[in-house]
Image 1 (spheres, one colour):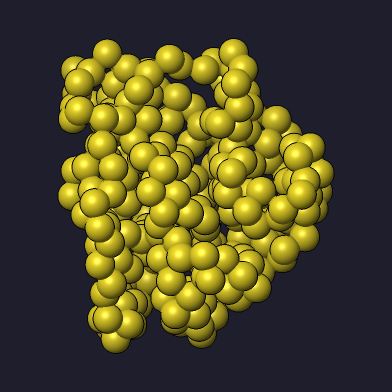
Image 2 (tube, helix red, strand yellow):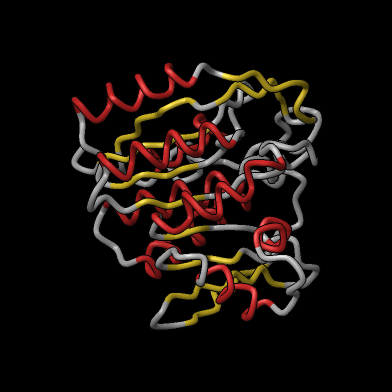
Amino acid sequence: MKYKCLSIAGFDGSGGAGIQADLKTFSATGSYGMTVLTAIPVQNTCGVRNCYDIPLSCIQEQLEAIFEDIKPDAIKIGMLFSADIIKLVASFLKDQATGIPIVLDPVMVAKSGDPLLQVDAIDVLKTQLIPMVDLITPNLPEAKTLVPSIDEKKTLAYQLLALGCKAVLLKGGHEESATSEDLFVSHHEAVLLSSERIASKNTHGTGCTLSAAITSFIAQGHSYLEACRKAKIYLFNAIFHSKDESVGKGHGPVHHFYDMWR
């Protein structure tokens, strides 16, 4: 348990996304996982039924409890839900997480299409959190929400980088192509990460899983680019090994432990 990762994210009782997916991913990729819960969406593989707030004081106390006891080697941030939660998390990490790599998955919409970030929180995410994190991992719809009116992928990625983070992994999962192409950009390089696209309805929690895997590999000492590369390979295999499975009636989960469950 040498490498310790913290997920600050929402809940998924069906186990395929949110902090549940993050914990599975941390474990499967060789890191010890911890969590701070930010909101409770009531969801399953078919969609989100409701979303309940957690008192801000509870989120603050969770953060304090972790940092007073176990210093994370890397932090993944997922669903934050509201402007107030974003402000709280940003303020705490600015004071307490100096030198710790932070990966932000700017979760806005569930796989089912249900919203997971309030509209008035988008500007706060852009101005108060993105400038202080190391890497963001938006999909194309999230990227175009953060930087409207830009369609060309490389230009979009660099406009996201200009928001103040150190690197961007712009995911290509929403594109219609034979390959899944994610674009990594930093202030030093631009690299296209490509893999075969797998035909599968079991894609619930893919964004959570990818960003958690990146966080795990960064905690283990890999560069941002190499962590993205290794995480993409991990996610490809997790999707591949779940494509013929049937867990739930909607978008099923990926197989986080494909390499262990023989």
